[in-house]
Structure formats: structure tokens, C-alpha cells
Length: 112
Image 1 (cartoon, rainbow, N blue to C red):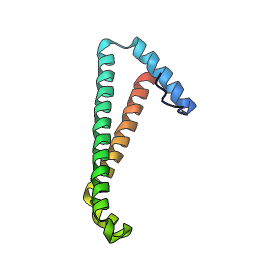
Image 2: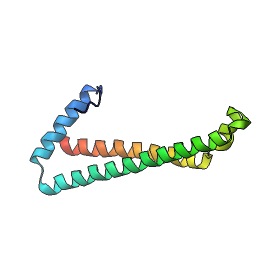
Image 3: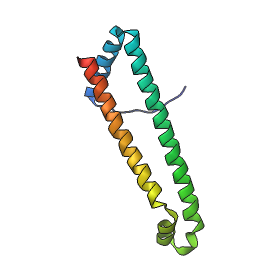
Image 4: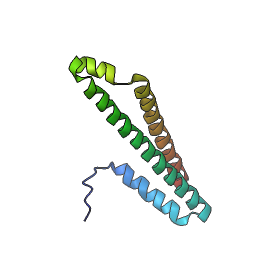
């Protein structure tokens, strides 16, 4: 049996989930398809972002490790590629903003 652990959720999340489930139960096939495509798009974007962050972290660790003879501070300074770090940070912030907007839009559809 797969055990994913205990995730504590806010009570409003459960209420939102009930409203969305009720909305999808009575929604047309086109609306269900649009929600399904949005969820699939979210999953693809999340996986791409997670994979990119993992690859960046791995390559950064290798660069820092190769410069370890310089000392920890200098190795981190020379090993971390700051422009790519800024791009990853911006991409992650954009992902979080779009995720929040998507949840709000779905919640608005479910409420109205």
C-alpha cells in the first residue's frame, strides 16, 4: 500500500473541493473537458518546472563540489549561476501566481 503521509488542509479547502465537485457533477461535457485540460496543463507545467529545478540543483552542486578547494564561501560564489537562479525563481513565482489565479477562476465558476 502506498502511503503519502498526512497533509493538513485548511477547512476552507475542503469546502472549496465540495463546491467544485458539485459543479463538475452538473457541468456539461465541454466544461468538464475544459477543466480536465486545465488540470492536465497544470500537471505538465508543474513537472517541467520541478524537473528543471532538480537539474539546476544537481548541476549547481557539481559545480560547487568542483570548486571546493577554494573554500565553501568562494565555491558557492563561483558555482551558483545567478542568472539561471533568477530565471528559475521568476518561473516559480509565475507558476504560483497562475496556480492561484486558476484556483480562483475554478472556485468562481463553482460558486456562480
